[in-house]
Length: 284
Image 1 (tube, rainbow, N blue to C red):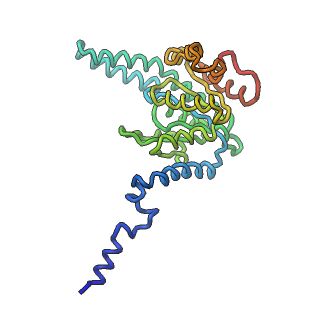
Image 2 (cartoon, rainbow, N blue to C red):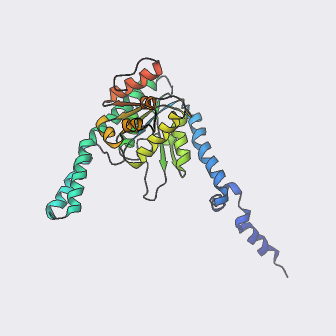
Image 3 (cartoon, rainbow, N blue to C red):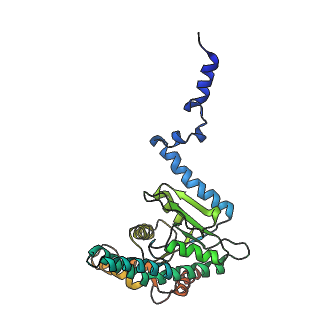
């Protein structure tokens, strides 16, 4: 004879009985990818509207570029290791790299100063214009969120799930810190409200984000914004844009999509010049 009470208990515990919106395993299935993409589009968008975010300034840069004290501590540690293993070529290489990062720690200070300058200038009287947005991680991203925090202003962090876990930096406005699974949706949110893109020295991730924006600007698939590359010497060594133009694979006019700056004030002047319709500075 069928035990109806046991059968009902079995039904209530069945995965099929869980509300679809609460069924994490169901939502994680490959067939539900379109739904997950939509959720990653809508969740930040609705939060931005709720927080009154009108426009943003995007700051990209390397995770390994730390403030001077931390960079020096890292160098001291690898130099100490090398002293005890003087013939270790790998450690010698680590020392060389750590010295380069100490030299680049000035970019941490520039990013922090720039974000503070922008936030102080634009987040006034309750307005949320030119809000700093970063990838939410360490390094240059931390510096920019920290600069906004110094100004008691809002800033955004768009973090990404990675095999090597990356936690958000603590300077992001808590209500404006998001975690993404899909790089594509994250990139869209970087650029939706962007009024400027500021690129500090960085690696593959920074280059990926730079070229994504450059391609959209080149093909006129996004709003006109200044793309400011900080540290001309670094960037001209990394990417020879003039060579691309000389080879005919980009137009000469595409070189005008990029400006170079060395200080926080120079970056801000380029951004203001673009949006005020005045002539940009000589490094453009």
